[in-house]
Image (tube, rainbow, N blue to C red):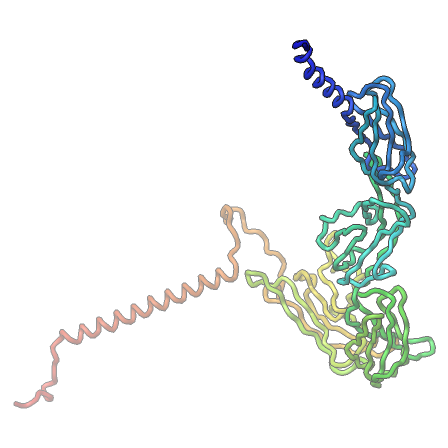
Length: 492
């Protein structure tokens, strides 16, 4: 007969053995930690630990599910295994570790390592190349590296960091700096810096500077000419061709009656001069300037080349400038010449030559001279009217290129106004008894108004008196009886 107690304990013993077997076959749960980014040739560390695993614990570092590339043993328990790795080009990939202890094992989580290559040999290129652009065009600068990964870029203009938000016309896109519409202020030196960052460690490479040249479009050329007399007596014309705006080099061509006379390229100038032999009194033809660049070809307005000698009629025209109270304050004298292309004009005041360096009574000490010249001497401005500038003025002219040439002069013109027609010496002051406090001398206008009022009053009084006399006479005739002589009494 069996023991009932043993029969009862048998299932409990079997269940305990099953639990022990299950616990003995439970897998480990190791944890792997390590970098996700690492510079090429740097040393990195992976850590693997299996919490609660009984020592000794064997660890293996595995890459891309291949064979173990390194191993380690924990003899104390709960101590991580350290795996040191020098990063090479082939080091990038997926890593995990395996742990074994007491016939149990487990596989950790995965860590992907990416190899970062520092930038090197950085340079700037442009589109178009070389970096020369006309205003208004689009320009793209590119920051290129011969080697590098995981890169960011910074741009510098004249060694100052370029902020994309500083101008809507300039913005960065990846390794490109885009200038949508080039302006003259964008000209200068540009450089870039390529860099990568791993755990606050920055590796960078900077380029050399490249110069951006911004060209401006050329304005319409202007043509003018002057003359000078050579030692041999020949008259030489100096024809000027110029533009007010443009980027050299500019090729200037002189056209005479639509035919090319000469051509010069101004490498660093916006103007050029051509020499042409002139004959006074003879029309040489119609001249034009032609200005050319690689993108523009513009011709100036025509100019007739003719040197007319000074002659004909010459006269002086006078205009006065008045204040608000109608008193003249300045005068403008213009010398009008009917004939002459290049006159040299001289002004005379009361027979004396008036020049800008004349030291006469016209200069008031420590004050501005009361006259000035404009329009190459054609106009004389009397900036202050008074006795010192009144008098007779005339102008004379000759050819500016011939100092020994004949003069043509105008007739005298008197510059005065009524307030100063006959200047008299200052009157003596009145006796003190006749002087009134704060009395002032009445002006001509006040005297005129008072005189008119007096005449009007006399007229009104006179008319009133005449009217009264006539009225009284009429009253007297209506009241007296009519007496007839006896001989003229009418018969009944």
